[in-house]
Length: 109
View 1 (tube, rainbow, N blue to C red):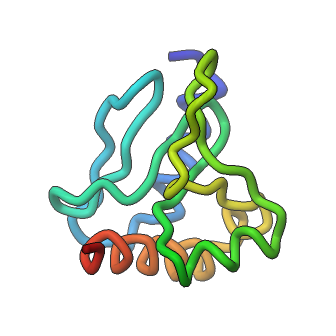
View 2: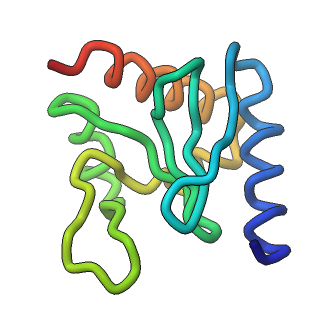
């Protein structure tokens, strides 16, 4: 992992410190964000992606966020959308968005 990615992960970890059961695990060529055993987010390079459902995804689309796809792959993981920098920089908002992603994962069918 390069230094920029490590620093970005540390920033996200610091911003989400108040989330109970938060952990990071290697996933693909980045990291998965877990709340207990539920993966609700991905870090790839210097980008953060949160899990969405049909309702929460609209907010990401309205802000013109991009969907996660692995490098070299034409397939996108349509449920994971990039979190805007303005949200990452605002701890309270980032925690709210993370909680929303966790809830979306818990209630998925």
